Length: 314
Image 1 (tube, rainbow, N blue to C red):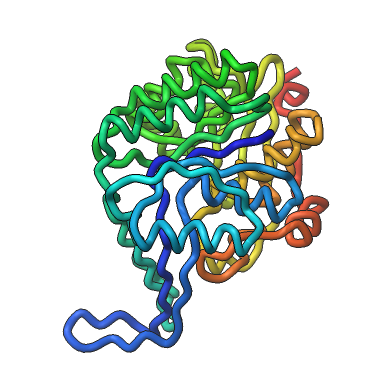
Image 2 (cartoon, helix red, strand yellow):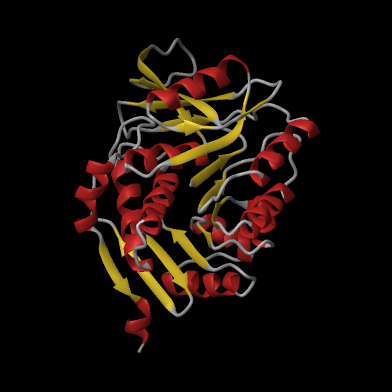
């Protein structure tokens, strides 16, 4: 079974206004609520792609109930740990006038008690025949970044592939356990190696440096410039077509899901990369915090360009 893990999931409350006015009342034209968080988004897209999976994480309070119900409505299986605190609500405000600005307000989320974290670790230890796990996102209060290292270690011991999508200390901690894949964006990759990365060559070199620390394959998302994959003797760049972007939230999560779709179907690295890029691009064309479905992704796949960087270097 494929699992995803979101330690600090949320309900994303998205509102559309004509223009934000900080000196007067701003009227909301419409709004929607979606389950959110990196692992949650990956599960939503995987489910839309027809890949069975189970979403793990912490939920609490009425918002936690809502999150589980909304996931169930979308057909996403869950196996959450209930906590005493309230699941967070993030606020996303999109302007319909002008340049289409958007404002993202991210809440901290509940504080996790030691026994609640212990319950999650026991649940992960007892997973039956896991094949793959996507791990990522922010950590709730009370959880140290070392949790990522410990979880990846457990999953590796159980023979499962691990995909880590995190930043800062969470990413550094997770890397210590040698995950099979990591997927930082360009900015997160720059922070990881401690220098600004300005071009494709510098990004590839940085990816090789990170691989030398025990990471199997490094995926770096670069927005409209595409996504690069650096593995053992393999370097590919997948580039999307120019599309009308109406959403900037959760694109990386969709890319991870598309990549995992390829892994689940035993595709080669380059084809996994193409499907990941297609999924991220397709989600960019969905309004609010909606996510691309199978039809969206498959229609985008033939439009993705692919370069074999190793072959070009010869």
